[in-house]
Amino acid sequence: MKTSTLLISILSAADIAAAEKFVVGPPGFAQSIGLNVTEPEHHPQLAARQAKGGGSGRTVVLKNRTPQIKGSKSVKIRYGPFTVRGGGANGGEGMIWNQPTPKIAKPCSSCMIVAMNAGLEYMDGKDANTDSLMWLHHMVLFNIGKGLTDATCRGLGLPHMIVGTSVANSERIFSSGNERTPVFFNPPWENTTNIGYPVYPADRFGLITDLMNMNPGSKTVYLVMYYDYVEGHPTNFKEIKPVWFDVAQCGISEVNGRTAGSKFTVSAAPWTANFNGDILQAGGHLHDGGAAVDLVVDGRTVCTSTSVYGTDAEIMNRARAIIRGEVPPLPAGVSSGSTPAAKAAKSKGHHDIRHIMSMGICDPLVKDPKGLPVVPFKITRVKTGQRWVLKAHYDYKTHPGMKKGNTNNMQSVMGIAIMFVKTDGKRAH
Image (cartoon, rainbow, N blue to C red; front, side, top):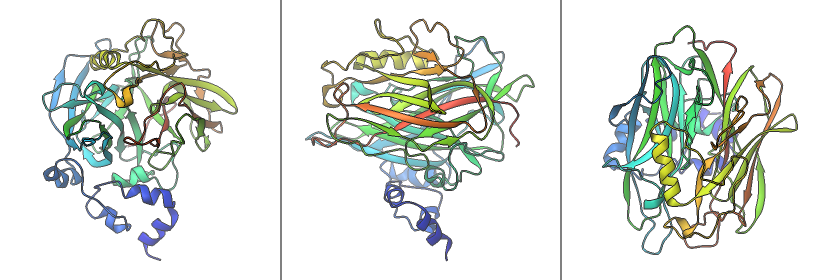
């Protein structure tokens, strides 16, 4: 049996259908496993360069966003540009569906990343967000290199394949939706300055980008990553490993969005913990209509990442604070453990509804969040043999979800959480 035939027979029909949405990959990769490939929806002249490992824009050195960490530096890197088609005169949405870029610029050659967050901006540097009908729908950042394995995906991983790698030599290290949750491995509510994610010279970063445009005409944007890091690998630094939970674990993360007005829960396949370490934090990702993401360990709910909805103005204010390297507090009257119903506030967003502006962060060391979107993680350790399950809860009656164009059909949804764990050992490289 040919390798391509074997791979196709193992992948599910749903994943194969989804794979046809991915537009480019390493030269000849998609064709080698029998997938149909469509033209990219960003600048055509950039497609070849990105497929060969470009996709990196300008790197800008920023004012240090983590001055409490000795020797740390902060940079912003633009990836793209991407031109997202419009939704047309009659409304609807234009999409770039899971656009892979197999190789992108790293913030450093050899370093420890201590914090990072994602954004979306126009060519002139202005934030692209819900107020101008643009969404950072979903992005995934990969690290590919020796000594790396994806903690939760075994066998074949479709996201890994389309950035030219496998689950055996790569891991998904960061993700963001339009809530743009920042990741701080040494957060301001803790007294640590020596925890980071290791990057080595031979490592390669890859990217999957999913963008949405609700404007009638096309828009050109850059995906932006903000990185804070320390050069080299100081001996006193502890390493972290990401653990990716997903309702479609080794697929494209999207599942059926059910029907308008429904309330439902989608669960991921169980993960049996395969390493030991101290939990730093975890945060969820949902689409509009989502209420919360639960992490359940051996039958006990240990983390609830709750969605908070806001107006365009509130979303923009939070985005600006996150760009500065802050964890902005929630609006007055909103706690991190619960979220108010999405009120019928008029905005220029999709279907004139509020949108998710924040997802709660679970942290075992937090005691008094002081208005931050942070709640206690009810356990402190990942232990080999634990049974972990993610549950994503949706409630369209409380939080109107997104519909496909002007129809009454619901868009697909996601349920994701990323947990960062301080490992007991060091990565081999």
